[in-house]
Image 1 (cartoon, rainbow, N blue to C red):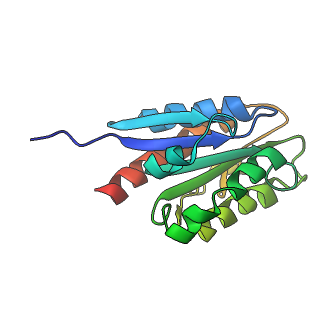
Image 2: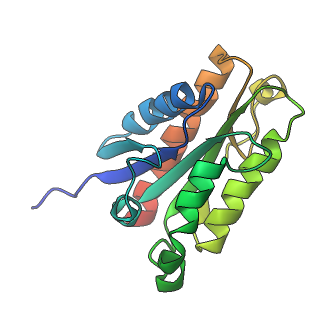
Length: 171
């Protein structure tokens, strides 16, 4: 019997405050699921083939009241993937960091989720927990000003949840 190829999770994030550290905790969560391979990329490293090869795509951006410009420009070059349906049915999730709790964090997450919906992807968020009262959003993982232990736990949980669901969807 041939072993099943690993589930591939692409974590695509733009550079900025805390975002790389949050991406690494998401990667650790995804890697905790057996038969999962994680690829971390920023827009300068990523290719369209990275997205096509992935079973799941987790996009992170610092909060600039929406997706940061360099990542947005890169995503805008992938319109033909939308037309071809190359990402349809893949799992998607979002994460962001910001300097203040009321600075558009959820709006930024919703911008990323909107991009996923435009590509007919399946969105994965976080189930509510008491911890969310202090940190995070059910739309995706977040960190505000600093990376707390609660933020790290939510990032890990998001990565793990995405990998588990992507494996189920693929199988």
